[in-house]
Length: 116
Length: 118
Image (cartoon, rainbow over the protein chains, first blue to last red):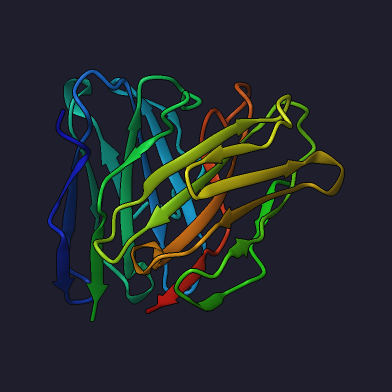
């Protein structure tokens, strides 16, 4: 079974540019989560999809961040325009249950975003 | 508010030593879940264990063991006879219950970087 896949693994962009991160969850997982870890800080929740619907987007920092999940499959997270403080590692996770079962949430390897 | 504290930022041990990673949590919920994840140098977060708030039984899996104590709000993780391959960042996390806007999202600690030297 393929795991959670994130593209790209690294991205370096200039302040003001746009970047789109992609997450492919495990096939059949209705729940998809985005998290972010800024340097030296905790990994923080951004939002949660159930299929194509946003269940909880309370962690989205501001309206420069837009997440979509077309058809309930893969998800994209767009940052427009990017600011220096957006630099960090963006993780995606998926699960079958909303509160992960005995196997936990499955995380991807993350996308390291650097805004210069 | 919910919070997870991992007071140990970095720990360095020599191979075969036992090591305990501390995790203290805060929550007002009566139903919650606790997790440990391992982040090896490759970057992905690898699930290790989930424990629900009604199950205080300690868990052992090979060289790994977990001690959950509600009285002290702690969920500590011990590696027995550590190995170089155990070197990683370990995260403790707390999940909210099924209601409101916190359905299933995880609250992470800052992580503890474990270095096991040969």
